[in-house]
Length: 128
Image (cartoon, rainbow, N blue to C red; front, side, top):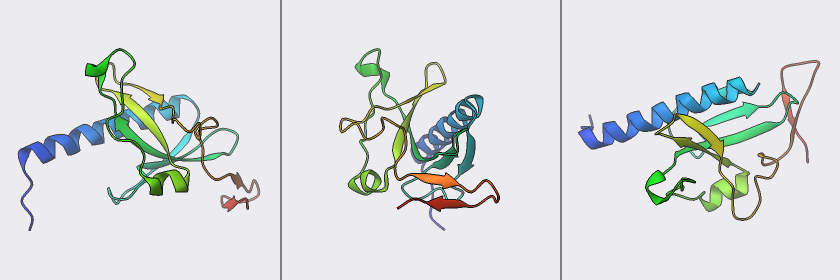
């Protein structure tokens, strides 16, 4: 069994806290939220907004030592960009969240590939 260092546990706990605040923030805005229960991978959660749009989200804790706007230390990976994953920033000082603006403008609609919810069932359909 792998030994977990104290600093790793602290980082994991901070990440878990950020994800929980993100879920509550999304709920307050009317989203349905589904967490990644494997705690690995490129997506932390999948959210569905009130109009049925599916958004793939990676939650990042923002660094406010750089200034008032908060900076994200790690940008999206090329794989995350290709998958249309957007970043949701968490402010550890205020426990508030905000959408991270991507330099390429790919999060203008806060989603990647378009999905539509089939209103007659609970299934989602990828629009190609």
